[in-house]
Picture 1 (cartoon, rainbow, N blue to C red):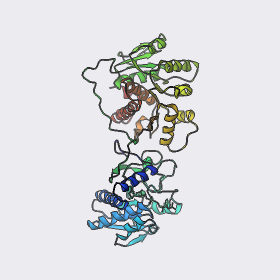
Picture 2 (picture 1 turned 90 degrees about the vertical axis):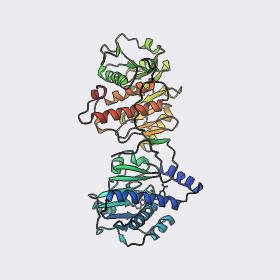
Picture 3 (picture 1 turned 135 degrees about the horizontal axis):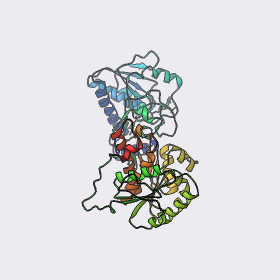
Picture 4 (picture 1 turned 45 degrees about the horizontal axis):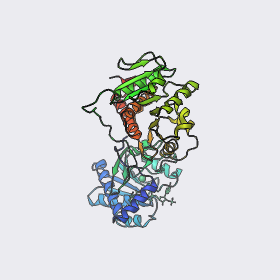
Length: 450
Ligand SMILES: NC(=O)C1=CN([C@@H]2O[C@H](COP(=O)(O)OP(=O)(O)OC[C@H]3O[C@@H](n4cnc5c(N)ncnc54)[C@H](OP(=O)(O)O)[C@@H]3O)[C@@H](O)[C@H]2O)[C@H](O)CC1
Ligand SMILES: [K+]
């Protein structure tokens, strides 16, 4: 499973607007369909490697892309058959259907499969889950190689409804832009390897996939304080904050202080057990404060979160610190990153609806902070509407302590100065890259060890 890096993600509404803008600029919808069909044909040819191809066409424009691809494949001498669920209903699909001169088989339980199945039944126009009857028919093909056109049929491309598609794709060819369903659970795994066919659509990258993680080398004039000083505040569970502190150092902070703990995980980290938190918050060199890891909810946490908020430092708020800060967060815009996992998010933002992207955006707007809504399909959202989707993260990160590591990495990226969204994106990218490097058997400590 993979998605292209730094690729735009558009909802159905945004996609329709981008298509309309294309038309105004002189590219007609039928030209777009021709480009889409050509991209499908190219990908199918590569996947089939000479073996026969069966294209399943639906009644809308997704089916239209299928008919165009069939025509182009036949013109290039490929062995291709077409089966249709219903007659085309759009003008574009009717025209594409008319361009296919071969036979059209009915899509029923007697349809013979082929080594490669192209799923062009429904795209962004899916309006309901696939019927049980059609799901049974499609189930006969699930041992074949599957190429899904735009999205696997039967997903809600905006990612709001949890419909599961009957056919999981090996490859999904996203047309014009990726869609939320490609990067959100439960549908993302069914998309397999997602490829993007730009087809000349100019798509905004306000919502996009993670960029390739860079190796930001310190510049030649770097010294430990201008690389970023991070203050990690340790609660009663010292191990969690120790992981955050170690991660901050590994992720590139120049100087890390672990406050409220007697033992530092590395000798390079200053551990101060004598409750100098208030004093440290006044240190102008501190670029970011991490609070929450290893801290159960309670008066002590509330007191420390208040002090951190009063300091106006850039903040990383994790776990119970999110709830503690919530009432004051939107008061003054600040550089802050919140790192809730599913349960913490639901507790902090119970009244939000829509896809995970919609909910993360709404939480960021409400708190005026960057929200890293963690999970296998992590979403990073900024108050100004920017969103980065981190699918596929690493399954090895689903283990205790990795959230503490991420909070520390956020601290390191934030302490350098600059934009909290960019810092959060860099931290999530770093976290996933570390996990990929380690792989099987990962424990959180490995992420901060060499
Ligand atoms: N992105 C682009 O620039 C381009 C995209 N193209 C392709 O067009 C599709 C979107 O096409 P659209 O016609 O809007 O919709 P679909 O083809 O996805 O599906 C709509 C029809 O399917 C019926 N439908 C929907 N869900 C079901 C279902 N579960 N069971 C049965 N039938 C279903 C729907 O019927 P309604 O009753 O809901 O009206 C419609 O008949 C996009 O994904 C791209 O593949 C073009 O190539 C142009 C460029
Ligand atoms: K499809």
